Image (cartoon, rainbow, N blue to C red; front, side, top):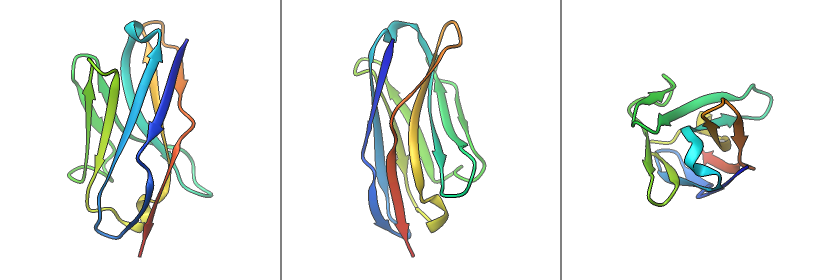
Length: 116
């Protein structure tokens, strides 16, 4: 089992920045991908960014150039640095992880609200 705990959400003005953190615990040795998804009210959950254990990164087009995902393997933590935030970035951001047998784990989520 893997537990994921997010932190770092909050309220920020348009153009501001936030840094989300996700700490993994448990059977973390088997994790080969970690990432962030988000879900806004009334919308489907969407991919924000992922990073593999080898360092390959993928971003949604909507966040490219503004968000940066990184991973600290020693601390079992994945980060999402979010800059130039816009009201449309308002959502619950969830950390997820996939292990070597393609089992997915999810955190509880952290709210990000961008005021206009």
